[in-house]
Length: 150
Length: 150
Image (tube, rainbow over all chains, first blue to last red; front, side, top):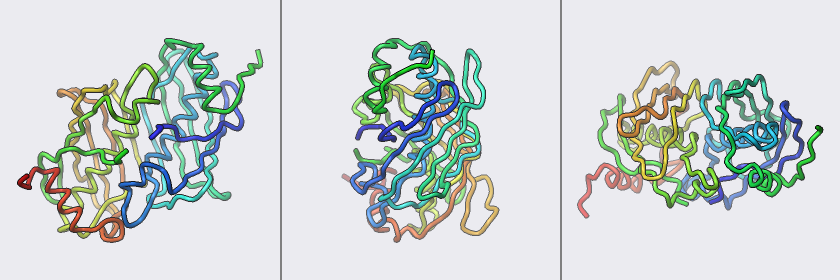
């Protein structure tokens, strides 16, 4: 299993917001044991999808000089029993940021309905070991070339 | 990948508490992308381990008639990294039962006595036979609890 829970980043605005998409198919590896009589997407996968996009937004906003690690989640809602076969739109926003950490929020929409959200998600900042490599990874995994405003 | 986040169940009291272990191996699929060259266990996988442990507590408390699915995370804090080779010990306690069919839990994960994750979450209870073969789950529980002779 590739631990990636977005298929593409569709829009990104430095230090502000990010949007991406993820399609959930019946072939997902995690469905093998979740569950044998009724396939349902684990709630934490929705959380990880929002967390991965916001993590990229923080890294992108620092010109790939910083990585982000999850510290806190508050006010999270996820569907407990959602069958695969849908396309999710993932949205994330930075609420506040300091030198040490970033607070954000996220939500997931399916067919015009908000199905999951995180009211508060906090990341700690870490100096990036290899900004050039991070940038290449971002371009590969997001499907977007990095063109900065500045 | 087998989406099974509990390796061993050490102790339980029906409708009250359960203690389990997740052994974190370098061979875990999630380490390939989380993160390249810096493998740390994703925080949401710790949450999933707690959710699965809650399922096991419901199963053993209901004679394998019920399972638990998480749909709200009230608060979850992460403390430092969980690395390949670590043994994550997870303890879960029932907090209250405010509504019919719903439960609230408090969970903590430690590595060598050091706190790594604390979470309060809630969800709903489903008939186990809608998700899995109850007798197969009973067997799996006995394997996890070392209550079977090999």
